Length: 61
Image 1 (cartoon, rainbow, N blue to C red):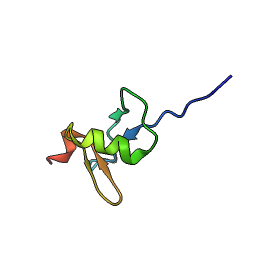
Image 2: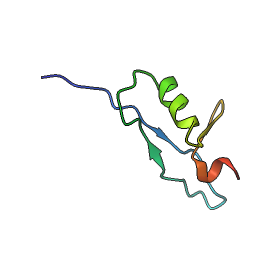
Image 3: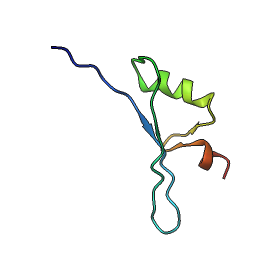
C-alpha cells in the first residue's frame, strides 16, 4: 500500500466580521512542493505574500 501527499492552498482572506474565505485549490497533476503549486496558481490569479495566500476574488481587493 502506498500513500501520496495532497498539496493544497487555502485563501487566507478574513472579512471584518471574522468570516474566512473557504476557497481551496490544488494542482490537477502531481506537484512535490507548495512552491510549485503556488507557481501554478499565480497564473490563475492567486496572490501570495509572506503571511497570506489570496484567491483571485480577494487578490484584487
